[in-house]
Amino acid sequence: MASVRLRGIRKQYGDNPVIKGVDLDIEDGQFVVFVGPSGCGKSTLLRMIAGLEDISDGTLELGGVVSNGIEPAQRGIAMVFQSYALYPHMTVAENMGFALKLAKVPKAEIQERVARAAEILQIGHLLERKPKALSGGQRQRVAIGRAIVRKPEVFLFDEPLSNLDAALRAQTRVELARLHRELGATMIYVTHDQVEAMTLGQKIVVFNGGHIEQTGTPLELYERPANLFVASFLGSPRMNFLKAGLVGEREHLASVRLPSGATVEVAADAGRMQVGAGVTLGVRPEHLRLAHVGTIDPRLELSAEPGSSPGRERRKEGRREGIPGTLNLVEYLGDVALAYVQVAGVDEMVSVKIHGSHGGFGLPALGSEVRLTFDPRQAYLFDEAGKALPGAHAPAAVPAA
Image 1 (cartoon, rainbow, N blue to C red):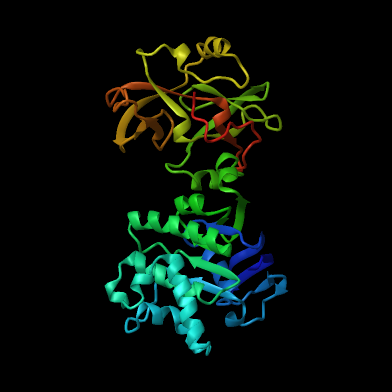
Image 2: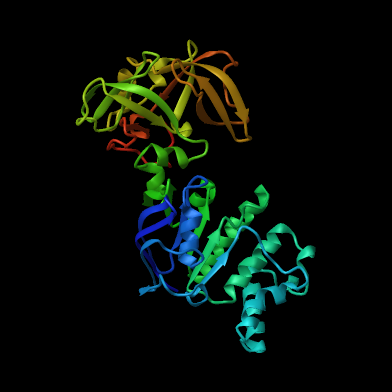
């Protein structure tokens, strides 16, 4: 297998820059996911690594060898596309071994490689079938097998699951993760689906507008997004964002006032900012708590400060009112429900993820006045430029108390 090193990579079509100077290191055997919205340049960069697009500027190294001028067939790379591109008149075995046949690999070796790839992908019983007799998931596995038999240094996947239904996507994600563990191969996977990115990638590279916004493990990006773009892109449902103004800071807690007039605290370092500066408050749906106004003791429902004792938390919380709003909609999704709350001065409804208990969620009626609260360590502040302020964030896996 091989490492991949990109330095100052640029791609330009005429006067239109598409890739705007990318620096990235991918280690030997690593599973890296390029994620971002359509048109951000992730697929173009993948094709540049494969040699299907010329590099306008910068250096590409594969296994320590500068590869800018090396022909695609000589780069030791196999690519799996969104389209299966199987030959309809050939059997599965013939499709998988066709590239080796063109390369004049001995027939016995072709059969051995095809059989091994089929065993890995659990499609040995399909080798004599033709593509029309296969399901979408089986066809995708054949396309992956066609790449495996070439024994490439690097596997490239360009949105390979886009044509599958939801159940098959989930199943194939598991198979791809297993395949990576078994082969120990370097894999680069492109997707616009943040669920695929979070579940597959050892390292995620978030692209936007032809450049990298942030790189890190799934948990690092989820817990410590560098900016508004990354925070909004990773997470389902996405993070809630509320415009606010900074009103003060004490003991590493920044106080912000929302358009509704409610004041809340966030564990963030806002010392470099002036009082009155505009900020954006970000809270993930699973970290919000919802209380029906007038039916629940407010002292027991509001957020706790880091490091405080339970008794002290409740006394302090009793002096806060949280964020008032109106419950407008509830989506029941089995073991969880998504409650949508309209908050004064906020254009989009705020979503709250609620886990059911003993078959019930205990939610008030639609139209009820409610209050939203959160642990200050499980919220984020972003400055006017969209950059995240430093904060002492609690692990994402820890639910709001």
